[in-house]
Length: 166
Image (cartoon, rainbow, N blue to C red):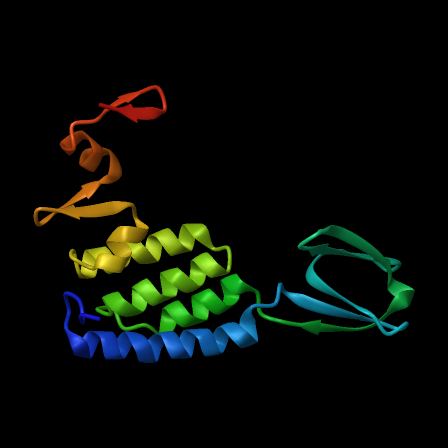
């Protein structure tokens, strides 16, 4: 596999950063909190409301309302957004491959706006970053980066409604 536009050294740095990112992913992928129940079960999600008598937790499946008396303890965990902010703060300002890797991590953790921002930062630092350009929907044609629409027009296609035709 070729090293890409920034050379083998950059790919090596990206590999090391990606390993660090995915190491943090294993620790920080949990929703936000783990509510341990006195009966032995647990509910994972973000606590959205808490009163003297109830606790409402937003889970992947929806909101769950628990009686406060049924809760043994609450284990606070970092949300993906918290982990993202921590990782972004550790990146060097000129690290296009690191921004790309962080964008991939963001996508995998549902942080789509942040992913796009990281891909855009990677392209700003390295205008020929193939991975970031691809994630932003660009294709390389005859040495130029084109949007998907520009590439289709260059191929002689015309958009009619929502379809491209010859």
